[in-house]
Image (cartoon, helix red, strand yellow):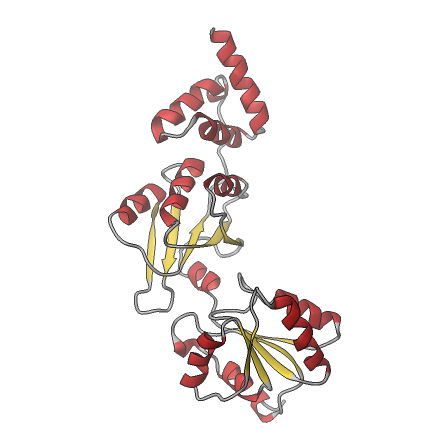
Length: 290
C-alpha cells in the first residue's frame, strides 16, 4: 500500500489535532494535511496563525467558533459538497473535545461527506496516562459547573465504581472545587491535578484532597489544568452505623465542618438511600428526641 504522503489529499473534512503546548507534538500527518488543505477553519485565526507561521504553512484560514458555528457550518458544508478539502482545528488539542466542532462533523456525515480524524495531542488522555489512576475505565466530564451548588450536585452524581473521572478546571475555581470534593468524598479522597501539560512548567500534584487544599492555599496557581479522581465504592454500612442517621450527620459535621444538608447527602449516598428518605428519617429521629 502506498504511503499517504504519496497520494493527493482526498476531498472531505479533516479534524486535525494540534499541540496543547509543545510544538514538537504536531504530527507529520497533521502538517501534511494542513499544507494540502484548501482552507483551514480555526477556533481563533490569530492563535492558529502562530502555529502556521512556525511551520511555514500558507493556507487561507477562516474563523469557526461557538459564536458563528451555525452559520459557518452551512458555508463550510457547501464548500465540502463542491469537493473542497477543509481542515478544522481548535486553539490547542483534539478538535471537538470541550471545543466547538461536533456540529460540523455531524452535518458533514449527514451530507455524505467524508470525515477524517487526524489524531494528536489531548490534555485529557495525557493527564490520565500519567496520573497513576485507573485507565481501563474513565469518563471525561468537561468543566464542572461554576456555581457551588450545581458543582456539588454534579460531584454527588458521579458513579462510585473505582473508575476515573476527569474534568477541566480553571485556576480561579480550583480551590473551591477541591473544597466541594472534600465535602462530598471526604478529606482522604485521592486527587490528581495535571497542570500546564507539555509546557515548560508542566506539573503533576498527586495527594489527598485535604493535602492539596493546603498546598494550593500557600501558592498562586496559574495555567490550564486537568483534574482527576477515582472515588472508591462506598463501603456497606454496619448495622451499628445504620441505627442513627442523626448521629452520623452530627459526627460528619463536626469532623469536616460540613453543613447539615451536605452531611446528610453524604450519609445518604454512603448508605445507598435517597436524600429524601434520609431527610425523613433524620426528622423522625430528631422528633423522637424532643
